[in-house]
Image 1 (cartoon, rainbow, N blue to C red):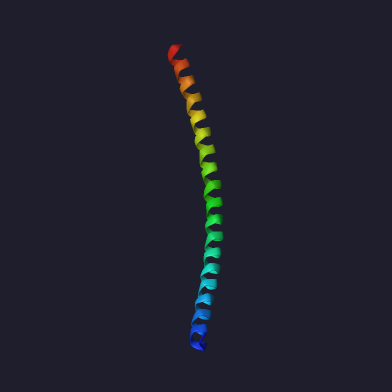
Image 2: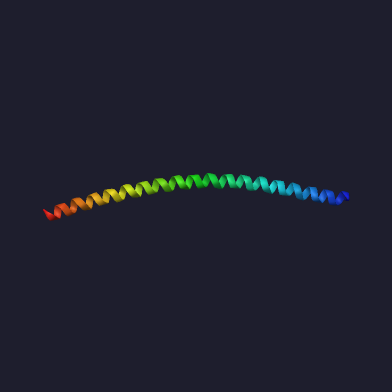
Length: 68
């Protein structure tokens, strides 16, 4: 193998290593964002459930008042 071809191949391998490292960092960032979104989603679902429960309680009281 000629020196030029070896240097070219070596450069491409270095580029692939850099690309893999970049992708690994990006993947870690995406996983962190995913965890954050999942946590926020859970909080919103809990708030929604609580609001629905309160609304149902208000409706029950209003119906009871209407029947009186």
